[in-house]
Length: 291
Image 1 (spheres, helix red, strand yellow):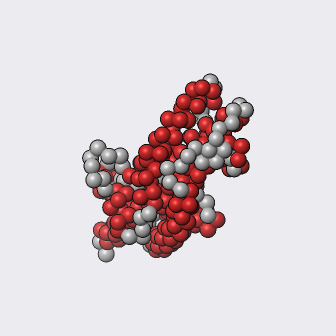
Image 2 (image 1 turned 90 degrees about the vertical axis):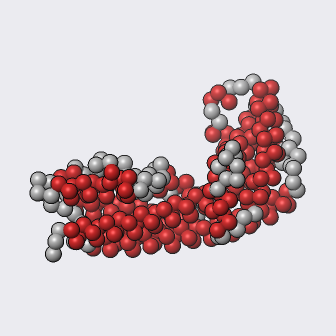
Image 3 (image 1 turned 180 degrees about the horizontal axis):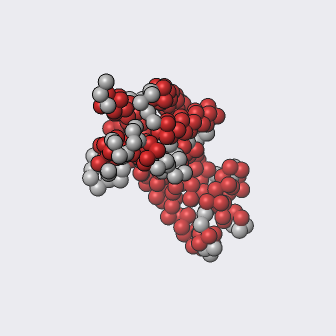
């Protein structure tokens, strides 16, 4: 059998994993958008209560404030807080529209990824920014409370009951998306298992694949525990699939044959390793062209 046969099988394996990681990325981004909305709406509700009644969890947001914000005079903190509350009021209507989407439908992809106006902010970015704005506003109220300055609850632009209803719907949809993530990870693990059983793969690359599979095992455990998606390996490590931090094996260790005999194999093996350890948006063709 020619030397190109195992090479062809490796390419097919890489292509299959590439497609699944793209789908997984999209599911994770949708689920994270739901998380951002949940955290944002929770913060909006907290802004509606007096500072003396702030829940214990809100007090922990104080640690997120920068040293510069903590050292601002009270009048500046109040001014900053008022500006943030105004921003929240103007953006809340759009956030509530997003939270009413059925995220299991194709509409979710169209709304979150496609902008109707080139000047508009990407919806995914808008949701993340709104979360930061709302949580910063809560943090400033905590700061004022620590300084002995009470603040009343800010009037909400919509009834609190409406926000509670949206949060209940989002909770159901978050669980659905987590189920999809789990299913896709299990599919990827099956593919990795077949790749590990393939004798054409060099041992150094198999070691990399084992670490990928181990990370996915940890991700499944975190999903089962209900951990936030930001705790998953392919999110925390700059959206890399493996999350590996250590130096990878030398080129000579991951070639299918000796470099002097099969230089073309060296390029493919290195490209495969590089692609497996690259950001989500790097395609197999891009990784290979870097040789």
